[in-house]
Length: 156
Ligand code: FES
Ligand code: FES
Image (cartoon, rainbow, N blue to C red; front, side):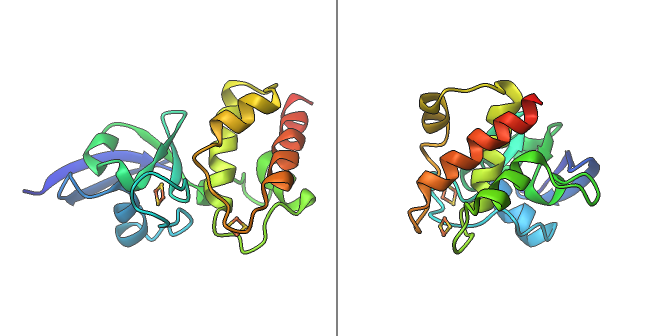
């Protein structure tokens, strides 16, 4: 049965009337046309669908949209401040931490949630946090460099 779900997405209060068991990813992509979060595995194993919910990274493919009721969601579309990219986006571009780019939105949001909680993580903490995020292009070395660089930018 459909329910009303009210949440804030990238600063905008948003109401959807839908089956609350649908995935948050499906609602973001299909209903709200926010296609930055990607469908990879659909079962919580690749991180391509990562978004930030109340400051924490969630895997939106396995998060029922009903769980987002009353919450604040950030997607890659809402990360930049007008024309100014977020420091994590800047760092990924500067380092060239993207090849096909399919994993990039999830990587950037996962790193953003980490660095907002802990702007000075060790490499081990970065790897632990980003462990679920898979890059099929095997760009892990540059991704780690980009997260380190983003951390420096955020601390400055
Ligand atoms: S699509 Fe969500 S974790 Fe893979
Ligand atoms: S850049 Fe292609 S999957 Fe990561």
